[in-house]
Length: 376
Image (cartoon, rainbow, N blue to C red; front, side):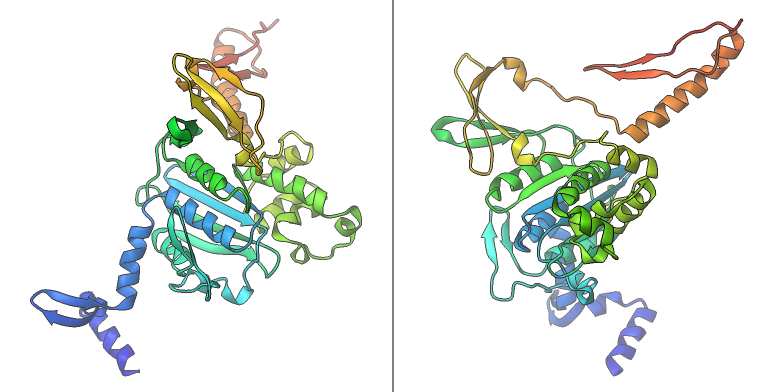
């Protein structure tokens, strides 16, 4: 009680620095309190969105997850991440405490991988210190988990280019190097390659991840259980979307696992308009540098590294081959804005205003087509 009163007194007089110091050693040296040392370490552990992604992926892998789903969205300077897995799960009593320092389920084991030591109980704490929001959406022992993170990109930046897929190149002595910006895709691909014998990784928008989980749920949960299951909490987190009976219930179930979307998007998923994602590992190609022949594709990676037919890639392979993919909701909004802007032209030039414009995405341009029909 006395300590609490002292801390409140120090806060009242603005002496925050005293709360950070355990002992003043003289000559400008101090011994920090453990809480202050942990906070400073957390700020160094997490310095970008990509750091958050790799720490969460490692956490899921160490929780025995066989499949990890990373849903990404961005609105202005706000980055949102929902990571779902089919691993060991988290007891309800620990949903908040897992974000405290030194909390870990790996009492007798921690290991070293290419990203350093893992198992100290500091990953989620470091993330929560640097994020605007960090919470367990849902998790139960044996049923996997869903964790939601929201960050401000002004305070915690990320690579500007988040669309370029990394290029894996095998050079001399069969050493594989990676080219491309160190963005979320590259971070996730490197993890998927490193952990290919333990788990599969899926990365996409919330709608794409929802479509992938819906397909998974339909394959995992039989029709009898889908009809008679009284509560989605009885199912594994990654299988719960299989219980959706209509778009509204789909959107509600998706929100319950941290994936937010409209009923219209949910309907498109149920109608099969949005295909499930393939594991990242299936998208990775290793190419081999060949003198005077550009790059030669060595193999397509899979969990057992089976080689595929080889073919020669043109030198243009290393050029900018990024494409543009616009989410359907954004495309619908864009079309509505175009149609609204067309109304003034239609009015002044006696054209039919009720039109359905078409937008086509080409390699280097957006083609907008508006049918013209004169008023009679």
